[in-house]
Amino acid sequence: MKINRDSKVVVLTGAGISAESGIKTFRDADGLWENHAIEEVATPYAWQANPQLVWQFYQARRRQLLEVEPNMAHQALVKLEEFLGDNFLLITQNVDDLHGRAGSKNLIHMHGELRVLRCESCNEVFDYMEPEHLGADYVACENCASERLRPHIVWFHEMPLKMPEIYAAVEDCDIFITIGTSGHVYPAAGLIDIAKQSGALCIGVNLDHPLNLAQHDDFLLGRAGEILPKLVAEMID
Ligand code: OAD
Image (tube, rainbow, N blue to C red):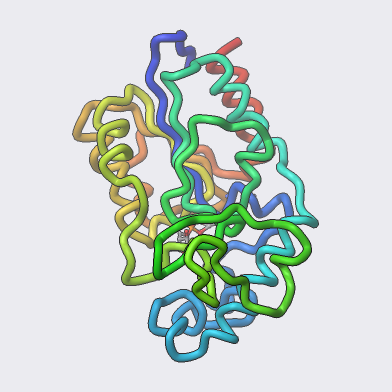
């Protein structure tokens, strides 16, 4: 399917796009995320009840970012953005920094970012990835001196970020592409419903069938790192 530079394309990515870079997806067969139940490490209640466990868990995920690299799928989306410019928006549920490091610019991290720590007292955010920010100790806020920054991650029971901007772009797009997401977690999983209602062509790329398979007009089964470079080449070459 060919597009032109006026086509408006919105892409939604999930954990599957980073799997080939060596980052585990959320819903692997054992139902655990890096050996933890999601409720143990990914809710505000867990942070209140057991901040040490939650802190150590995210510090390990943050350190892992130093060991992984963007893959062919991340790079293919950069090519698509270079072709479309401002008519391209990438929405990711991923908290890793691989899209940004690949070179994606028009990018929304709707579930937050591992690189970033946030102060619960003054709300300041800090892109902190130096060795002194990645150890076992809590990191203090430089702005208000609160002793403990939290991960800038949208936990269960918290609101995803930048939803008005996301809804506006999805309602206005011509093509909506989902990549590497299982369709379990809302509101991300429902964006395809909005795209469809607005008349967009909906394309999916995933290793297996997502829950919202039926909403896709065209579905490509397989690895994102193999499919995306071909798909983007077909669209723009
Ligand atoms: P999931 O782990 O639920 O789904 C990942 C999907 O990627 C699965 O359908 C896999 O089949 C697919 N997949 C795996 N390897 C792939 C590959 N190489 N190429 C293409 N697809 C592949 O992850 P998400 O849908 O991203 O939320 O999960 C959504 C949210 O649930 C996450 O953002 C996180 C989690 O709880 C928060 O942290 C708020």
